[in-house]
Amino acid sequence: MVLAREKARIARDYATADRMRAEMAAAGLTVVYRDATGRPDKSRGAVTWYTNDGRTGPPSLSTVEIESRLRAWIRARDVDQNHSRTRDLLAECAARGIGRSENWNSAGGQWFTAHGQRGPMPSLEGDTPAAP
Image (cartoon, rainbow, N blue to C red):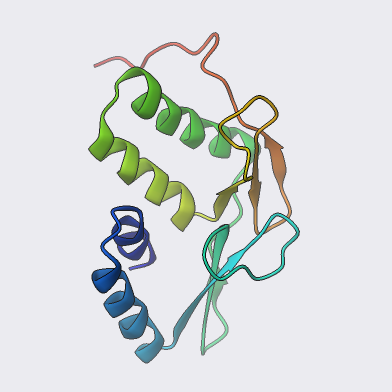
């Protein structure tokens, strides 16, 4: 449900996103966005969640997994120019707790997670396209 809400937010379907947030709250699931320092940020950042019974998420990802997901997103955005896939991949990154710094689209842009991981935005140089 966190992924579905992120897709609605990215598509700017705020009515659906708000409805889903209310449904998650009623079910005991709270979503918190965190900035690069780990502080709560109301509108953006790395997604974290917790439930009334003590479960938390999302699970930590390795740097390789994070960079692979970001490369897929960058490829869909810049190379394939597939807007629907770009939105879906960005929502998946957000739902998995991957945030982007404010200058993410420039040289020196960074990614971060709520678990304290961080690194430079990956490039597509040397990246081979996936087989069809």
